[in-house]
Length: 198
Image 1 (cartoon, rainbow, N blue to C red):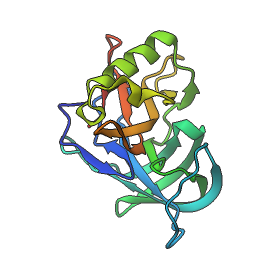
Image 2: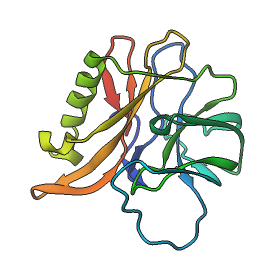
Image 3: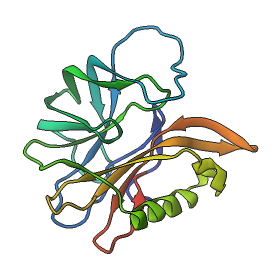
Image 4: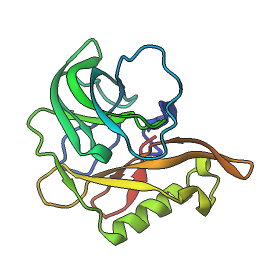
């Protein structure tokens, strides 16, 4: 959310600690590093997931404590989750999904035991998410920046409704074209409003 912290971009992900609606577990944002060493820039046009081990660096929000202990690492766009334990700010995973597209390395981290479920986003929620993205300065209020946008929803309280969403598409628009591709993370308030996590 805009009030959570200053914007930090890592691997194309707008990150910080989101304030979620009452009753939801805490949520942290992480960046998955597949530890593939030096490689050419990923330039796949289509979603290209592969199984690969690596480490998730869990980012610390400015408004509350860092994540610790047993957690679940979730990649909503790939429909993948894995249990792990945070050690020195990261979670080492023997196997996880890695999308070989530029900027699709963001994950969501929640406490172990959270009832994570991947859910479809209803049309009104999709429209609200697109509306929230259009207010973001990174996309310069340009509707064309949302062409080809991918969205994925996650239910975190077991009611079957999305509480959190991630996107993949243009993450920075400038001078008439998309300058970079990546992800946004958004949370849904109790009133049904979607806000970008920044």
